[in-house]
Length: 322
Length: 304
Image 1 (cartoon, each protein chain N blue to C red):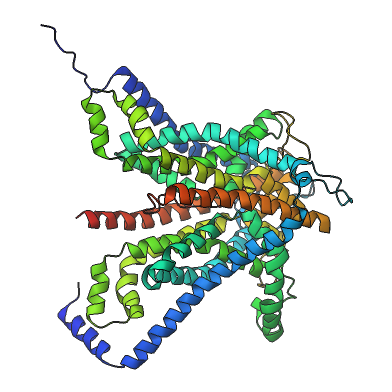
Image 2: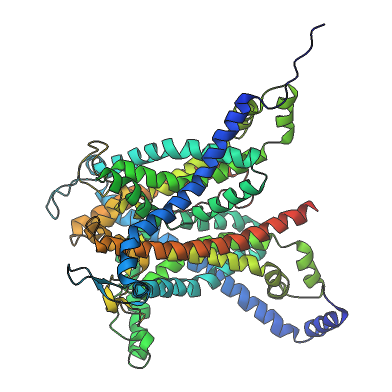
């Protein structure tokens, strides 16, 4: 009798395929490592010359012979615009998430979520165009001028003549851009809160707002923070809209002092000056150095956000299964 | 856990000042609704302005001709930009799709371990990464090595940007294929890789396609990484060692020019770009996302 050849499950083809797939999956790790390597080697020159003062200095002089570079104003500009965007964007996003998950009637939920997603799909450069030719005029005439007239002389935040191409405009457009990111993730996190939490509060006679405040927010706090940090990551790395709206100051003038003054962020200075920098020059090394700082900031933010968000969504899935 | 004392406290709180609490509730509901309106207004304004300012310049000539002399009476069109964007999308997909799909297969079929988790994690990290850094990277690797700005550098940058999206959607859609279908395949003695290619990939086809289209919608709007890679040009594609143009890049350049004709053209180009991106996203939503729109699997993102 002939013996049947049993298929042992793993042939040579299987092994080859698994290896190929593993290589493809590892590609992403290799890319990240290579990015770090390229940024470090590309900016080595500037760290050798400027040392720590590249982080703390504010000079930015590309004239040959008098070259001097400090990235402090741009680091500050990045955090100020992103902070402004967070300040405006987070409350609105969480409001939207609350409306979509707790309050909206069923027929409104999916069209509204869809609109928010469309907002997320508009390319950055179109936000920039819209900000430059439409939004900036409204902001300047309706918000900046009244604020400047009322407080301009007393409060340093509102000093200067509002022109519309400034930190405030950039921050507001960034806020609009991060709202869909934060709102859609927050909504998922709020939906992931078990209904038993809400029912317990309803049983005690709480109103909808009280349920949200006492039962939903405490339960989903870390996830909401994670969603906000993800929004921060987007705001920090955002390039085109900011480049078109922030006024593009360089050197010590770029240091953000007034909301209504021009500034510069890390990504916008790279986008603005890179085409002018000659290859292999100190100027280019300085710009790549700014890129390295941006990389370091962004990777910290993204890792923190992923840890917070994925943990919440994972425990939720575990809870449902159990 | 709520203790008995806390419960007593809650009960006391809820018994008192009912009318105030109901008013507070109404106010908050109003504010929350206001938040939604606040977010929808900019969207409405953007779509309205792009259509209002962009529609008048649209014509066959506008989308086929190369740009004319700056500031002249014959502003020409954005033909090279549209062509460049299409070529870029095609070439990036040729690199990004196979690697992304294979990576997704690995994560779904062999990735239930520490190595898989590490890759999944960094994949998610890269998905939200500032694309300008990826542009710098591509500049350092391709442009500096070859010595010229070219479509190759742009392709490399964009393929890295689409990779995490494709990997993630592939993994998620493969996981949706019921175990019984795999087991049916194994029971017939079919080899694992054949099961993956002939059974899993065909069952997960629509999910895979969704991921690829989402990533295309994303890279179609990318501007920042293109500044240092394809540089921009006024001519049609002339070879793999020449700078090329792309729609988002052209919009940016046009918006910086101090001429009304240039601005009008910028709006026109923005209309073409936004139509492309929206058609991709909305079309997808109605074709595929409905079926499995659970979780954050297919989150739509925009180009930076």
